[in-house]
Image (cartoon, rainbow, N blue to C red; front, side):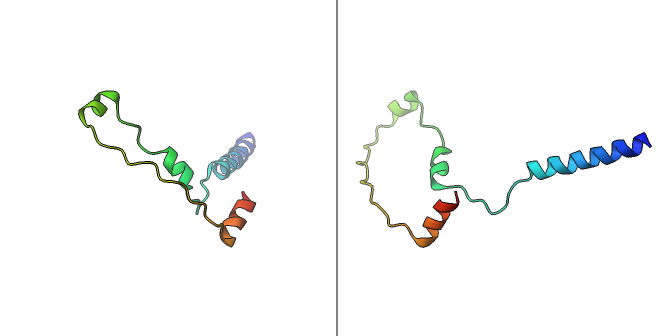
Length: 76
């Protein structure tokens, strides 16, 4: 009897843990997080060897939010 109860409880605990740790599907990384996860900047030693001229920073252009973008913002 004790084994049966123990098995039942362990089964419930396992299923709850699986549910909690389950990855949600259809989640796409945002541009922001993709930018964050880019490779690290080159080391100072390697920077000295290659002297490339940097382009000027591009001016940010404001974009009008689409209806889908607004609803996505509301949800999060």
